[in-house]
Length: 319
Image (cartoon, one colour):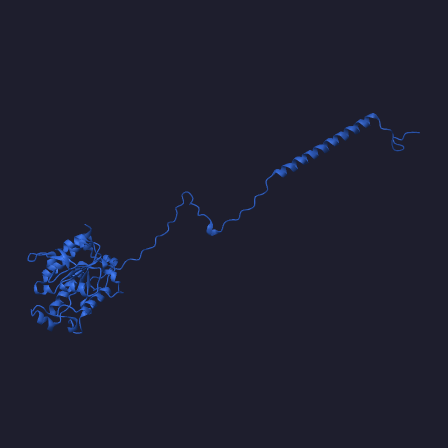
């Protein structure tokens, strides 16, 4: 039987043709193998790449940090608020009516005066304040002059006696109240009275630099009862009114507070009413209570007091 080796009529391939075909098949196989290898390497590289990071959203505007200014850029300073100026107290006017303070407001106060002031201690209901008050004490006894020596008095009516200024050297007060004048009416020297009050203010300030100083007005007398107690011609309400004007001038000049106590204690005629006094000069208990109530509703803010100080006085105190 004849062996079939090709298509009918086709010539038999020779050795050369078979060799060429074999080399072509080898080359094609090699190319195919390279292609597979390259593809495998590329897939591996892709598998090793990190996944893309998720996009981080920007923080809200109110939580973003404020970056420092760029070099050379001048930061804009934040303006400081302008403080409201404290109004200066007008020392030509008496202490105005204010809301009533509590009783303990007087716990750092001292009252200096004569027997009327001592009556305030005993009968008004005031508590906590100190008193340097004594019968017949005069403003001249506080600072002295060429005719009158300084006088020693007890603190709060009992115990050891020292001069007023010596007591003021021992303790600091926030308020100092003065009331003098009834006994001084008989002294007959307006200039000496004014000078003694002015010097007393200076001496108090030297010892009590943080204190608000109050000068209380004289309270008029009840003429009929007073005449029976003391018929002296100088003891009259015309002299009281004149001395109150002198006290107002001292307050304006020295920068201390004038307290018009008299306005709370007199009647329509400008006199101390009979029901308000035992002897025409001193007060009944209810009138001492009226006095105390008036003081509670006529106070001055320390900042306003300081702001209103005369320039010359302030400079003198700072030296």
